[in-house]
Length: 397
Image (cartoon, rainbow, N blue to C red):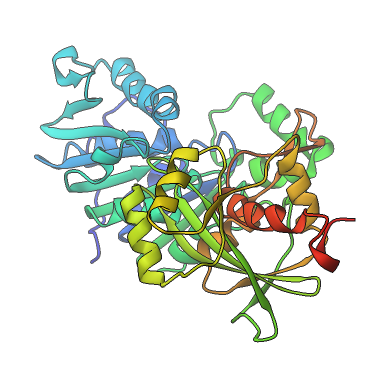
């Protein structure tokens, strides 16, 4: 479905400064608009201006959803910016602002602010317009849950700090998507001081300059694993075990299977799903027809492990100890890792599982605590077995 292009409506009368981002939204007739940009390109501000002064005045009775990954980030950024614009323009009315539900009535349209750590809202009412701020924070599953309940237009913005992401592979190529890329040079309202600091990145950090200066996809130096993509597990590979990481509201429960052939590991994703109870996991195992194969799960969840064992599954606590995360990573780096091509979440996490960097861009020997749900499951499976000194030629020496 195409959305008709329109004139600027109340934008021409509003005392707000706009740039190319706002014009993109006025000109586009596509269902999805992707705004990729560097720092200070005015992405978020101009999208909010378009909503407040163009979309809302031309509609009545619509539900406008503004979303981010977590509520603290939502409240401190895009929600604050929205309210500040209204206040600056003398448009804010306390009686239209429901603070407890994070909603605002604008021209008889409902503007709701939701986050992915509020699953009841994500799966709640249908919406007419969706704006996802910093969309690269979201999982593919998050995106699907949101768009399935969106009747009309979808707008996303982000800094392209991920080398690989579902946005690049599954959203931008769609025929109903308009893609725009902006930089600080598209924002004519920046001070010389801010421009100077951004351009200083050319000399101090080439990677940050590429992402935050030029608004281009980052090629990370800090990615932890390399892998080879394969269509299927070779017949000569022997099954090693399953690995499972528990999640619930914000994080998915994951299950991977691992096969081994000399110093080649083959990994397949079986499960990547949120909101799974113990009964749900039990039924999933039944559907998979798992028999007595070992399943190494997070030892920090003894209750879940005990419940699944009582249901008849060979669930064992993962081996953990001092610095076991780094030890498990070091072990995996001794092998050539192969991921099956259908393991979409596993591949995505491998691409984005990275070492932390300090403020000076130095890589630290500490993995980031994100993109690690399937990678943790893999580590539980392999480290719990291959770190044993009596595990034949595969043991750590």
